[in-house]
Length: 199
Image (cartoon, rainbow, N blue to C red; front, side, top):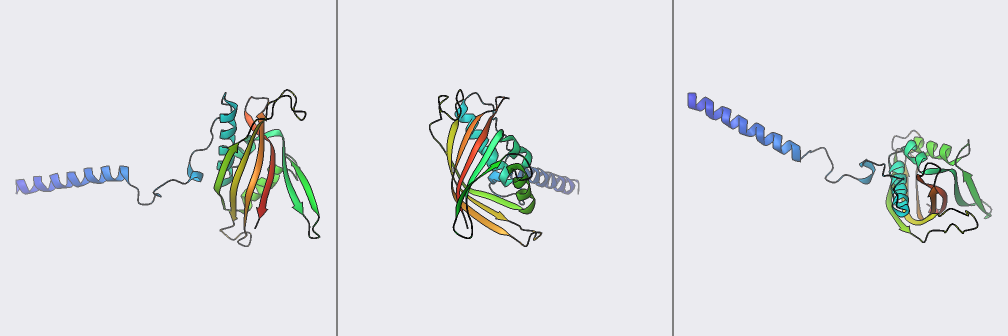
């Protein structure tokens, strides 16, 4: 009887140890591989290497979109940020539109609304490609070196909970990002020239 009790206790002990070891290595409710939008964001935008800092900004930008994080998004933008896109009206007229960072019609306000409307924002394709920097002799920004990156992307937006009629949109194409050091020495996006195609 004593041996039987010890055997049961020993078996339960082994089962408990096995469960503890198993639970530290496997979570049946977790995905097998974490998707980018669940990973910790904020890479240093103050890295001493301009190219690394610019790459980090674009990674933070992607994180902000996929996590509806307006604070991280705002930190990616220079105070003099401008968003540029081409608008075609119903009569076929083409207009280049420049949107400033701030204000009721500014990019921060628009992006905040975008984050409110769409529950799921995905950048399944996001391929940043560095270009030659614009030198400090450039007439548009004398004395400053600007990093230039082209990004190939596919963006999808979905209103999953139906608060906005289950709206969903997609856009893909290319965007040109020009980045510079802000007054606090962090690299930020000065110009986002969007060349995407809405679907």
